[in-house]
Image 1 (cartoon, rainbow, N blue to C red):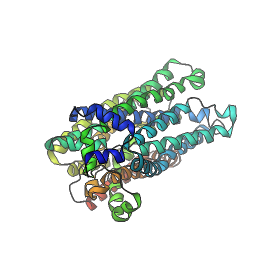
Image 2: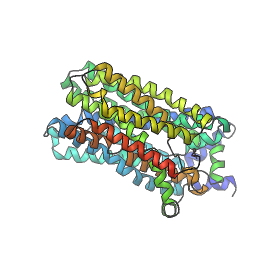
Image 3: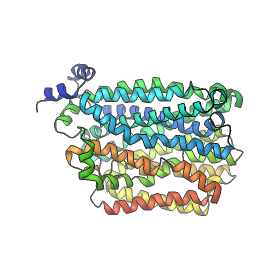
Image 4: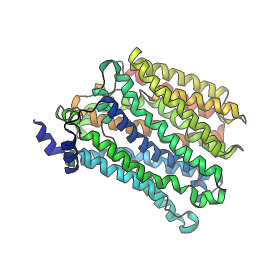
Length: 445
């Protein structure tokens, strides 16, 4: 199929115009990396703004009728809605991609993501409109989930395939930097308002500002990503069917087992993801006297460590192979989980112990998360890799992270803090089992 035929059939006018403006410029892996990191950071900013607010804002603004613990559990249940909606979003936006092109899909998904996040900043609380506030918050959270499913763009694959062969592990890790960068931005914003406003002012208007920023951040991310989608490299990969969306049902029928194994491989990393970001803030807020704003700054420093560990994971993957690195990191997470069962440093009234726990957790998160995304999609038929990678990612988040804060907080409050380590240990053992089932060398699509 000729390149112009592919462009004419699968591209929106916005894509075609951008492509015409950039045909004389060959995009380097470094440029792709910057665009991908900006896009991922915007997604994770929206993600963490809602996650942090689910601990420090929503229990008081939207669930004031419940005791603090129950209100936080209700809030975490609301938080989980996006992970349920995310695979549905992938299905919907895959159809949009196939019919109207990648540019239309990304534009619609990122505008939906930015709008859903920004609109939360205008919501009245339960005291103003009663249960309607909860329904509206739920609708917007589902909107975020649908948009996150549609935001999958294949640019991480474009980055890996354009990188030198001997450095593909390094370049495949770079998109994962969006997670710590998005967390740092969201936590610093919330920390600033928590530490500098009275509680009344923060709950009245201060918490709304991070949500309000989301739309502008997503517009910037959209242009950064559209510029890459419009490149000749992307078009050539589409022509070779390496980044082309495929029908969902044939994918599930022919590669259901690979999708499931691929979703289980990152389980240790994704379980740890929420046990060092969202859940600790909830426990600090509910059961200690430490300021949430201060603790968010501690976590921000841990996120910088996470970013360094992500880069290190790429270097190590190029040296020892991705599968071996995932085995080692899952084993280290299992050891960390056992230590959490024996001595849960985070939850003792010891600031030094809490800092050690957070920094160690973030370091392990970066090491594992840097290479966990799309780990077995190379086993899929070429025409299914793009959509298969998206669905695998969605299922991994749903199984590993979507309900983690809710489950762990409920169990820990009722049965003790050892449940934190037990939950994490189960994720690590599942990852190890999945890696055994997937014996071939896993690599980024």
